[in-house]
Image (cartoon, rainbow, N blue to C red):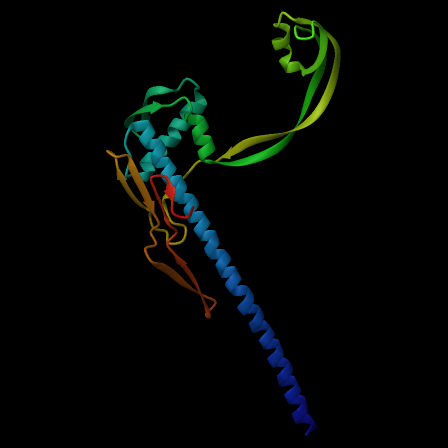
Length: 248
């Protein structure tokens, strides 16, 4: 009789352990799958945005969209490289790439627009060494000399003023400045492929009306099994139509 009670106790303990394990699986596995779905969705929309922007840049350079994404991407990236190498590479230019000639019209702001479009906005704190000046200016309003403070980099503006009299003090200072900058990346061939399905994004355009649309290749629902009991499931990642994103 004692043996039977011990077995029952052991079975109860085993059952409790199994129940706890199942509870943990039921709670955490779906969360992991949801995070995976979110990650693929964000990456896919990121690529769709880059694909759309590359085609827009190509249209600005050549006057029309290009159904061959790789060709459009190579032209846009090559123009960016040329602008970086030569600041005078603006206006109408002839670009030769892989044995083919392209007539492109490069705007003065092309490099800036490229770097801010294909770049992540970041911030850094820079320590700036500067000099504060105490200067004397004649004030017409007060009809007498007046003192004020300015940074050394603005001194030339004050010296050119006929009311400037003199500098009476210089004081070096150190300050921390928050600087905004972009960490630029170069779009590659992966931009044209959905990270989940590996299929090309659907691209439709109208060169006459300057219309452009990018669609996710997932038409309805995409589903994959996960851990026998669960499934990875996602709807279409959306579309971009003439700059308007379906997920905004």
